[in-house]
Image 1 (cartoon, rainbow, N blue to C red):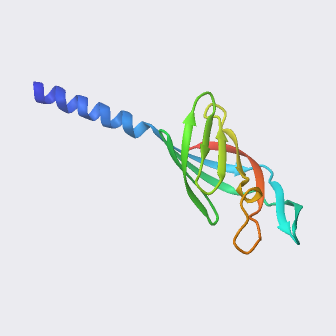
Image 2: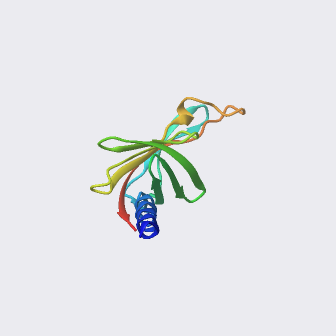
Image 3: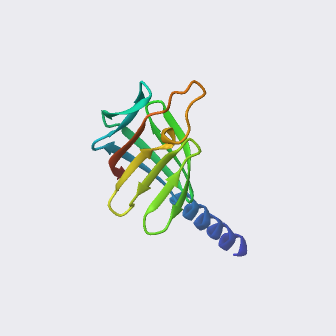
Length: 128
């Protein structure tokens, strides 16, 4: 009897932990920002991306095209996540609405004097 209860408790706990991981398919709605050209910022409009957002507690990951980066998140009213590469994600699990932004290029120039583009993209997500 004790073994059955322990097994049931272990299965319940493992199921609860597995439910914490959320995977969301996200579509960019619009995307624009700036690129560094001839020593100054030029406004540019980007093609919106399709994003894959994975959340597991305070850890996350986001993928789109060549981007595949780990996220560190805080989940208060709205989930906010940052990456070591300067990517910022804000997200509302209740509505699936959010945004992806990259602003590190405005602060840190590359070794050759160029700068990474900066952008913001509103997203709408659906949970898998």
